Each structure stands twice: as C-alpha cells, then as structure tokens.
Length: 254
Image 1 (cartoon, rainbow, N blue to C red):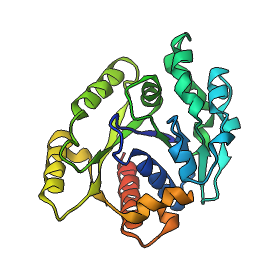
Image 2: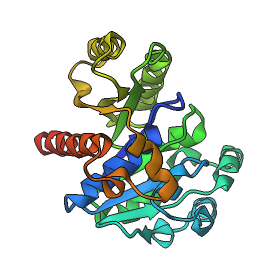
Image 3: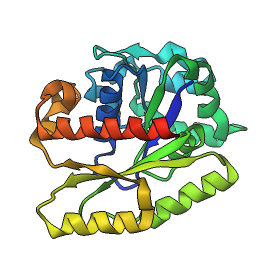
Image 4: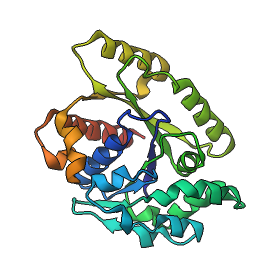
C-alpha cells in the first residue's frame, strides 16, 4: 500500500513543484511504482512531465466522487504515473465548501488506488486553503521545501501551526516526512545560517541533502522533463538522486 506524501509550503517559489516532480521521477527510476498527483491549479507538475493539462479529468471526478483510477496517466518515464491537474481546480474550493463531508473527499478518492503504488507524491497548492488542507488530510506525511534565503523561515511557524491543527483534529497520523533546503549555496554564510535555523526548528527532520541552484533544474520543465532525464550529470540531477536515496533510506527505517 502506498505511502502518501504531500510536498507543501504555503510560500511560493521555494522549489515545491520542482521537488515533487524530481523526487517522484527519481524514486520511480529506482524501481518503485510511483504516482505524481498534481493538486495545484497551476498544473506545473503536469507540464513538468510532458503532459497537457487539458487531459485532466480530476475536477469532474472529485465533484462526482468517482474513482480516481480514471484519471491515471502512465508517463513516458519508468514506473512514473500522473494524475494531472487543470485550472478548474481553483474553483473546486467553492464547490467543496457547500459539500457535506468535504474534508474526506480526497482521502476517500485515493483509497481505491493506494494498493497500486508504493509512493504517491502530491504537489499541493502554495496556500493554506481548502485544497492544501485536503492534501494534508489525505497524506501520511508532509515534505517541506524551504528556500535558502533570508526570509525562508518566515511563515514556517504558521505552516507548523496548520500542520498541528490538522494532526490534532483531522489526521492524527500525519507526520513530517522531512524538510528540504532548496536553492542552497554552500559558499555563502546565509545558506549555512538558514540550514542551522531549520535544524534548530525541525531537528533531525532536515535532510542532509540540499538542492543547489542549477540552470538545468530551471530549464527542464520547459522541455517537459524531470531534470534526472534532462541532464543526468547536472548538479541538480545529482542532488535529487541523493535526496531520493536519503528519502528511501528513511522509509526503510520506518
């Protein structure tokens, strides 16, 4: 049965989608059957693996409480499957607000397909709205990317508060999978300082692996490819390979 992980930070521009796409692709490449679930209305994870968001039926399936298996797409990448997003998801919050039991709609929709995968990685929206709440309610854990910059830890306490509220009231089994430092530059004191602060706050949940700024990581989405397929030897691809190994090793200890 799949472990469901939401890649989430309410602050945009932290490498959330990049991490969801590349971690999913690399975990799949190791032989683990993996589902990348694009739950962000911007649909960048969808285009990031070369799929047209027009192919999505996600909105209709959730509204009608249908089986999400109908939304599954097998990507061109080994063991990697996708549930694509579309921009209609932005209107889903209004629809859901009027639904009884809305908080379980995603969890229930994922239940029938959990046994088809080893990992389901959700690219959650960069907000603290209903869609993000649904992602966290449906997940076993949350992976938090943090940009290595001066304002990086701003909002982390709010995010942590939201996590605790959902854990207490709606998903008592929700864990923090890990905290990932992105756009990291080991040459600067700033990056080192952010890493230290993150470790003080999240302790051993902070991954030893960091993701550097890398032009290949920035370019690869425009070609519809995860960086590990775009340029296998780039520093970005190497970092995500290391992250996948660390991620899987932690999972083995669970």
